[in-house]
Length: 73
Image 1 (cartoon, rainbow, N blue to C red):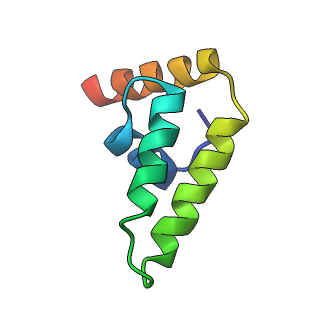
Image 2: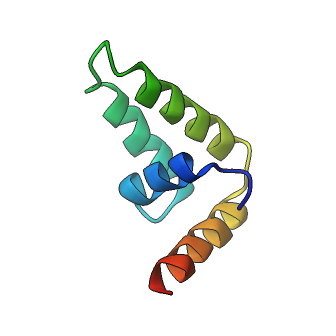
C-alpha cells in the first residue's frame, strides 16, 4: 500500500465505489465541482487517478481490502 500517501488513501476511502474504474469515475466527477483555489485537492486527485491508472484491478482490490482491515482495528 506504500504506493499511496496517507492523504491519497483518505481520498480513496471517501470516493471508493468498490471498483478501480468506479473510483476513477467518481474522482473525475468530483473534480468538476472544485473551486479555482482548491489546487491542492486537484493535484491530490490527479495523483491518485494517475496511480490508479497504473495498477490492476487485483492490486486495487488488495489495497482496499487492506484499508478496510486497518479501519476495523
